[in-house]
Amino acid sequence: MIRPAEENDLPLLQDIERAAGACFADIGMAFVAEDEPLPLDVLREYQRDSRAWVYTDPAGHPVAYLLADIVDGNAHIEQVSVHPAHAGRRLGHALLEHAAHWARSRGHRALTLTTFTHVPWNGPYYQRRGFRYLDDAQLTPGLYAIRASEAAHGLDQWPRACMRRDLTP
Image (tube, rainbow, N blue to C red; front, side, top):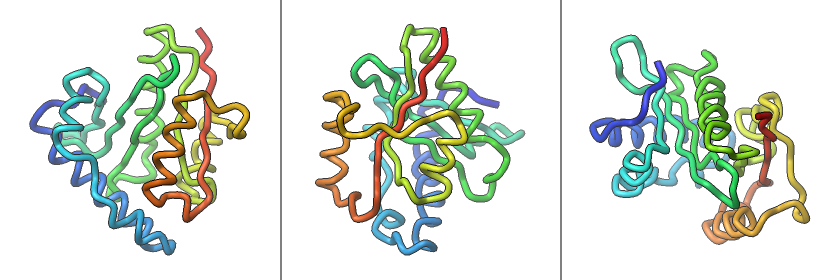
């Protein structure tokens, strides 16, 4: 049920992101909820570079997705979103495991990501998936640049951090 994203999936990824983002409004983070998803041209770059995967329902329609980058030699989870109608089914977990397998097969030693530390489906969720928080001294130059960009975008209105999951060969 996980497959590479296709061109015709890209608008659906935006819809998934909007739906998943709406949950942030319920916890007082309207700024995050109202943030627009990545533009189609950016999603297309991930899709063409084989760094975008979708989890599909039985009819083959995407209901969750993951985008990956390479940051300082590690696989970096740029985005993972699950449509709220499909939450609680371990789709995000399956996508993370898929990304871990992809990263291992390419010789990457870790998965990294940035996240909100106090949002239950963010930091605490990733901790349960084997990620650990990094302090500022542990940030690589690329992670530091991502965090600086996020802060400039206004995301530091709420506690935010980098996380890392080491991968075994």
